Image (tube, rainbow, N blue to C red; front, side, top):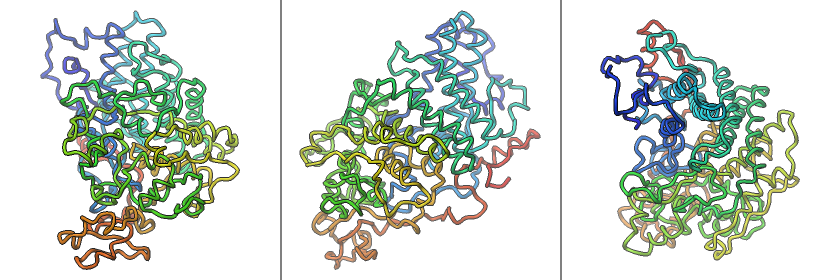
Length: 625
């Protein structure tokens, strides 16, 4: 369908080009813009493209254009992940180009966790709004407002993402005339103008999108809208507070995040009712009480409609990107304390056996239970995005079932979870408290953090002696010696909970940017970023003591010294796993003047294209002109 509807592939940048190759005779048997806009069915077809773009899940096949938006295959640039090599750099130079004219090309910037300089999806929404208003007069008010709400929801999402990446961007709220260069080459509008418009779009969607779309449970409904409002408004509210120091605007967006969270919580439709691993490894999430939105794969054809994410969790596939020691140390212990103050036996040990025994159950559910060289940078292998059977088969049998290998993975992807909404909600409330809002209560903590901590345990975890983490007590928060002293204790603990819950999902780099905390990625300040778990290599990984690992295998010992294996010092290979190939970031982005590491620059080609038409596109703030 989308290939037959000319307007589907229109993009803002495409309007710079000639349209002479378009057919000027009306189509008689195919859908065209002229004969398409007739019914709700047409509108559903039109919206299908949005789903794969905004709700990526585990992507498809080997990832295609969206591979950097899926867990394990993307989201590698943050303070949770180390790679076996030079760590991922942030951008410090202006690119030659940052635009695209296609809706299907790679339009995602991993180092910003957001879209490229591309307005085709904005145009798609504006066109839908125009056609509903001008060609679909037979729709009832309810039907019309529902679909306008859908269009405005997607427009609001895309603009919120663009603003998060670039700051000020041109704002378009109408379908453009190809001949109106003043509109086509308009300058950037202020972030505040654009985000006020996003706020209004999302308010309209929150009011008018149907509670449920009975045609298909996975179609966007008001609960899905509210869940994304909680995410997007938390992001903008904290950005306004920490980056722009604008408490009044921060309150506006944070209050909307709380409102959206209240709507979902008070509906009582969702709950934390499944064990953690099952959320990510299940072949069928249709019965999940936690998944507000998921992407299904189990019943798709085997070729290009399944995914590869579980393959990188199967204990056969080696992974050079792994969780680092900095992330491991952040995990709360089962008694609700940090490792420094926990009363649990060996809570201050960082070998895998003791980590599994002492840490919050999400640790056991996320990682393989033994140190392994398959996790080539840190010896800690992530198994979060696969069922429990897959890795067991991977280490015990010669033949791996097709569903666990290549790009034939069948497990469904939880796209939006109730747990995230709860964490968005409680963080927004805690931030509002610092701005003069209501004080966070123990009931608020019980509804959110403690509901998540009370998640059921898998039978496999129970068999290992894993216990649920003690509830968070607002009157007795952990006294974390590693706490950033600029962050109140409550907000620090909420951020910790978020870090554990959403590991290797979309959020960590987004969170660091909106908190203005990219300094957490500085290896000079945080040497744990370049270390893995504690390993007694001769005992736990004896096969790694071999001649060809000389000069490669290395550990950091208890004294903080990096010891590289030289073929004769096997007994010294006890410490935090850290191969000799692990290197700091090449470009010290925090120490380069004249750049803004929090927002992305636009490309030179995009600026020059304005100039050639007699207009000016200013460079992103902090990147020069």
